[in-house]
Image (cartoon, rainbow over all chains, first blue to last red; front, side):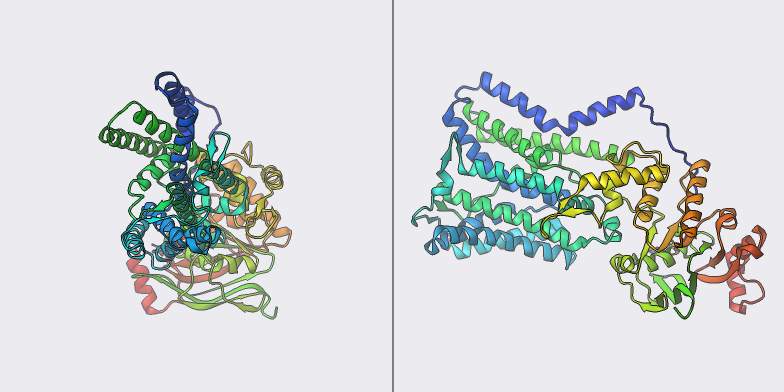
Length: 329
Length: 263
Ligand SMILES: Nc1ncnc2c1ncn2[C@@H]1O[C@H](COP(=O)(O)OP(=O)(O)OP(=O)(O)O)[C@@H](O)[C@H]1O
Ligand SMILES: [Mg+2]
């Protein structure tokens, strides 16, 4: 262990400058790609830049987008939750079942149901020491089962006064879900950059052992990150149910794919410790614009799957590339 | 403080699977001294200090701080006892900047308890001052640790331990990755810290360093203590002899066989 390495002089070679530029491009890829996609869509996609389309599109991606924000925080802490879609369905069903208690209380219960799933996930992962892929995959199946049981396999319609308000209230051209998405995005960004717990989530994702030795409650922090993901899924479920004035127990099957794609495009690493909420917001907008444009252009759903798969794979490859650079640096 | 020791470890044993890393080891650290801890690779030096810093827990043994028996179950306990450690593997979060690493676990904050806001301005200012005081060649505390050289990272780890004026400092090969000039700067700093009243355990492979700045030196071999020597009364050869051969003459038959088998 007595390698006699000296301080390296801080001169920057040409290859390093190239690497620097590449790093920068990769780090801000979501914003760059988003700008390109928007310009392209405005110029070449008919009806894209109409008020109605923008309202519809933003509401659509916002609900999944809220889940992306929760996942971003969880992935920075080096976790993942594959069951976010199932948790979203549960949140919606609980909201609809409880609607006779009044919409505000029902909404709160739907959100809390999501948080409870997060608590269970956090407990199983940290106390039982189950790998988080397995843990959240199992809890996803269980949550789906619970959702179908309590809804008796039926779509529950909203009849309470104000049930649909959250899904349709409008400010300017943005509906409530879009406002909630941007609001939650800003709050999450501030938490991750300005608060102590945000730094702690980065720390445990970067080096859990060092965090422990620095006195952090690593397990508690990790479990809390699962709760955040569950909470966001619950919020998304309530908003989705409100918007469609009904809760369908079978929704959310592609949610995890969309949310993870958006998060990783936004610069969050699958290897923990790296990522940012604003990038994830840009990633959500980017995927939303692409999905909307493909719909407007009449591209079939199957081709859309192919395209989404290609996007995810290329994003994951770039993530692996960046991380290999970082870990050997 | 009846014993006169700031730290007293008694009968510390630790086993990892089939490896007996420490076997009934005692250690006494006097207040305001630099105690060198030396020994071959795998002698158990890091393990002994990690037990004191709360990173590992001992299978058996007792620890007293200033005469009071304490139980150190995790790093928070150790910090409460005024113990701070520079780890051999540095224990830095590469994805965080220098200031966040230095302050990890004791950030300056303001505001409500649940969502404490970081006082970044204060943290950056104090980190910058610390880098300057330790003559660390890093241009800004806002730089992330991941792009730094081994020597720079080593100095960040040192700054992290020194920043909070802990009364007991454990340093696990803090000069290993440093160049000659940087190593000398750090050694001088360690001496200054001792003169200010800190009590220091310094693990190193460079015995001459200990002879230059240390007060006493303790030798470990195969997880067993071979002895503590007064630096003023020994030379390099005596220490090296003890590291290589163990405590000649005083050991039991069994031990002799052990040494032979070690080559
Ligand atoms: N976490 C661990 N798990 C398993 N074995 C360990 C662990 N830590 C240390 N050991 C073993 O315990 C023994 C003592 O290791 P330790 O790191 O304390 O030695 P050391 O004296 O610090 O050596 P070095 O000079 O190489 O740093 C070694 O045989 C090592 O393999
Ligand atoms: Mg060691």
